[in-house]
Amino acid sequence: IDRELNISLRLHFAPDEIEWGLVAGYLNHLAQLRPVTDHLVQCAQQGIWLEKAEEGKPLPEDFSIRGLVWAYFAFCPGWFDSDDDEDLLRNVETSRTHEARADRPLYYGLRLAF
Image 1 (cartoon, rainbow, N blue to C red):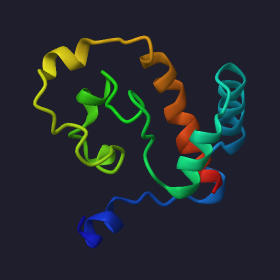
Image 2: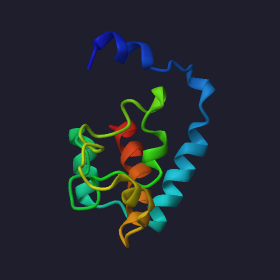
Image 3: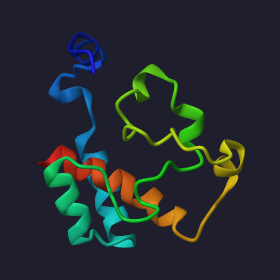
Image 4: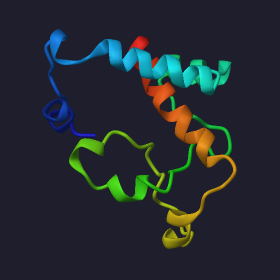
């Protein structure tokens, strides 16, 4: 990744520009609904993507935002390199999809905490 691109895409906020109380409240509520696993904490501490089956795959909504500039660093390298039928992947809701949706913001919340 180009270092200059990485720096230019960072958003700079003053401490009072983000409602951290609301972010914390959302993450705490989500953690009550979907417990934070040791695996999730370990991945966040190490800065690696979730690697269990179905955790490290794009969610159906990820296909819609993958080309946007602000989402450039939001996805694991190689997520969209599959030879599988992309249209099929976009519309598949597995039993694990809703859990992966909950794990994603918890993962990012933990990354912010570490």
